[in-house]
Image (cartoon, rainbow, N blue to C red):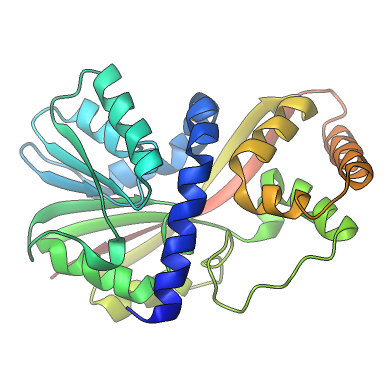
Length: 282
């Protein structure tokens, strides 16, 4: 792996480890929010008894946990770069009493599995953050059995994801933020039309399809939204770190106002949009 990619990987690992306590705290809210995308991934994978399933960039364990729960005769290997996130995933598996769910810390660009190992691979909201997306896709292709299936999700365009832009737009209006280089890891890196389809084709996948899936972030109030976003969203926390106390209060006030204008009835349930992409190995 190139030195630049190694640096990005190490930064990602440090960030996700740092934020894993926040993700654990907000796990119920987050997993409910992301459930529609996970359900579509599971539907597309068409999992059978005795399949071996790899869940990549699993974070706190989904959708691998649900797969293991629904398909008792499968085995699910849940992987992530972050030890902190995988520790939460493992804890969640133990809580649910799952005997067919195991975890391992590894880099998606160097998967520690032999060729032709898995029947299916799930990857919910991982690709946007991989240092080398094509290498990651090729690694997933390598470890899939012939006829194996992959389903992954990425965020759709910013205009369809007010749940994140409601705070990031206020931040950018108040703080001069550095512009990341084109193609660097980020929320909307894969939102371009055909981006993931082209990537999977390059990696060798066939029969690729793409579908928009909508979700809702039910935070109920602006206060819960603010607390949630400032504890789990690394870019938000990084940006707020550049603000003084007066600026932070101004940003907070403007975020609250933005949400109250959008949801005058006081029920803060925010729409989201993602693309779920499916492919097969010949």
